[in-house]
Every structure is written in C-alpha cells, then in structure tokens.
Length: 225
Image (cartoon, rainbow, N blue to C red; front, side):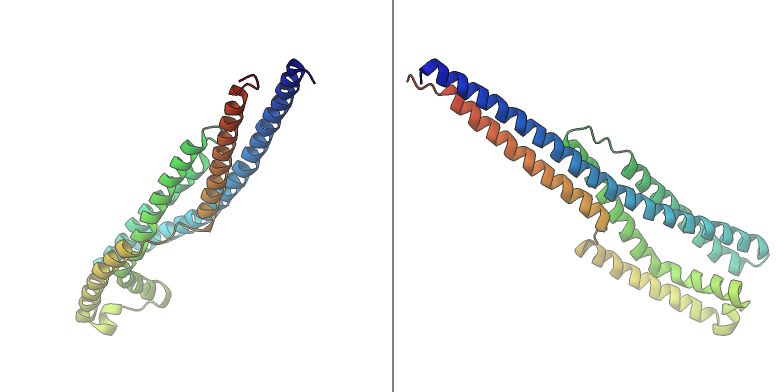
C-alpha cells in the first residue's frame, strides 16, 4: 500500500472515530443530564408537598392567633411558630427555584456549581430545622394542647415548668449547634443522585478529551520520520 493511500485511510478512519466519539459524548450527556433533571424534579415535587403542608400550618396558626388574641400566653407561642413556619416556607420555595432553574445546556462544571450551591443551602436548611426544633417544641406543645384539647398548659403544669422546658431547649440548642457542625447532615437522596450523574458525565467527558489529545499526538507523527 502506498504511503499516500495509507495516510488517506488513516485520516478517514480517524474522522469516523471522531464522529463516533462526538456522538457518544452527546448521547451520554443527554442521558445523564436527563437523569439529573428527573432527580431534581422529584426533589422539587417533595419540597412542593412540604410547602403545601407548611402553608396549611401557617393559615391554621393565623386562625389560632385570631381566635385566642386576648390571651397573650397562647398568642405569642403561636406567633413564634408562625414566623418559623413562614421562614421554612420561604426556604423551601427557594430550594424549589434553585432546583428547577438549572440550565442543562451549560458546561458540566457550571451545572455542578449550581448543584453545590443548592446542596449547601439544603444542608443549612436541615441544620436550622434540627437546631431550632429544640426551642420550638415547647410552643408547639402549648398551642397543640389548647387547639386540640382546649387545655391550658400553664394551669396544668405551672409557669415554672414552661420556663424549665425553655431553659432545657436552650441547652439542647447549644448541643445541636455543636453536633450540626461536627456531623453535617446529608442533602437528600435525589440531590445526591443528580450530583452523581453529573460526576459520571464529567469523568466521561474528561476521558474523551484525553482520547482526543492522544489521537492528535498520533496524527502529528509522520511515518516518514
């Protein structure tokens, strides 16, 4: 076989190989970005259900405040819970927006950066829920006993019992802050799954890039040398 014919065959083969790799890369990107998108849509759906539940809680607490307005000992715990529920609702809606507004036409590194921002936001949200729950359970108990049983916790257990529980909640709060910093909670299955798909895709594209560099080096070599 003549040298020119060999070069021509080699160039034709290399062109087909490049086309095949580009097609595989495109299919791989479409498949894994679709899986990541589906995982984030599932996360958004779960968060939306949580938002609906919180909205019901917020409205119910508002009605409780209006009904018991003259009694400050019931109103202030309900207001504290309502403020916490509104803050949690805002945080959930922010996470939904972050999950649904990702542009999958961006480079993989840019998508991973958006996912990492969502992950950190979600971790801080879970930490806040775990930490503040130590303080909020006493107001929850007061409001629940009044709303469902018509019972006055202050009369049943006394003010000293309420104060002791609040103090205990503050102590648990300090412990919860320390634990949340030492043992950071996870961000959830769906977000971890989406991140995993993108990591796999990034590794594939990196391997494909290395293969392209190797073929470029081979083309640079001439049999005449």
